[in-house]
Image (tube, rainbow, N blue to C red):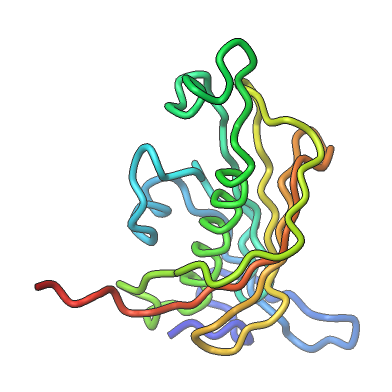
Length: 175
């Protein structure tokens, strides 16, 4: 199991102001690594890659927003705008990658479920052609239940923000 306080092989340690190790930089997860961690598939896979992963601390996801996204057909014809709930879902998927990577082997085969969303605010529309920068941070990590803060940005401008809670669990038993 990876421990946020002890870096994986090839990772570098991140320390706080007092020199205590608070996380390990493990690099990035391309689309294949994201798909290995999350069960989501098109059209609900809303993160293309995750970069700047610091175990137990934060990560940055990337979503290339394309006019080919199925939701643009109805939201809105003539003025395509990514639905806010899907921006929040993209942040949650980024947090799911962070949480499962932080757990290491203990996270293998687990699912990450939303439990709560708080303080969601939408600032600017997300339109086709945007590169959505999805920044998430752990605000509380208590084993199976974690809290995160998330910010979605376009070219450094805040598009959406929220706090959310997620639970890590085993998938349901097959019938």
